[in-house]
Image 1 (tube, rainbow, N blue to C red):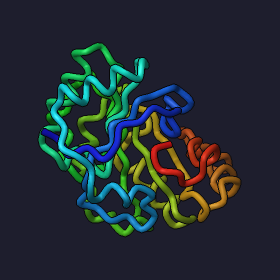
Image 2 (image 1 turned 60 degrees about the vertical axis):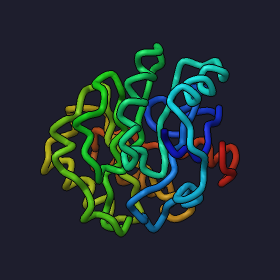
Image 3 (image 1 turned 90 degrees about the horizontal axis):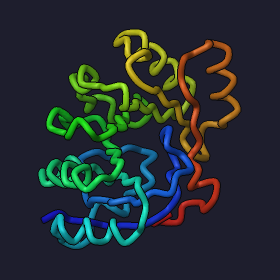
Image 4 (image 1 turned 120 degrees about the horizontal axis):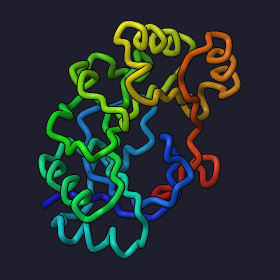
Length: 211
C-alpha cells in the first residue's frame, strides 16, 4: 500500500520531457521543507492505494509517460516496487526526488530527476551526495535557484563533482522570485553546459493543484 495524494493527467512541466502528455502519481509526505515548496499541500492527506489500483488509474489515462513525484516519493518504501512495476508494464518512467534519500534501489530503467538543494532552499545540508555517483545518462540533475548566490553555488557544485558530462543539468529559477531573464544572462555569460527551464505548468495554469 502507498499513500497517494493524487493521480492526474497533464503536460510535463519540467525536465527534458517538458510538454509531453504525462500521468503524474503524487505520493503524500516529504521530510524536507524547502522555502519555495509549491506542493506543501501534499505533505498530508491522500488515500491508501495498492500498486494494482495505481496501475489501473495510470492505464486509464492512455499515455506512455509516467512521473512519480511528491512530496518526496522515496520517503515511502513501497515506492521502489511501484517504480519497477510501472517499468514492467511498459511505461517510460521518471522519478522526481529531492536528493536527500538514497536512490541506489531505484530500478535502472527509471529516469531519476535529482533535485539538488541549494543554500537558498534552506535544506542544503540534507543533500545526499552519494547519489551523484549513481547518475546514469538518462538521469537529470536539477538546481532550483533563488538568487545569484544560489547560481554561483550551483556552478561551483557542477565543477566540484564533475557531473556536467554525466547527464542533463537543469537550472530553474524560483517562480516569481528570480527573474528568468537574469538567469538566462548568467548562463550565457558563463557558457555553462546546462539547460535552463521554466515551469510550463505554471505558465499555463498558475499554481492550480493537479495541473
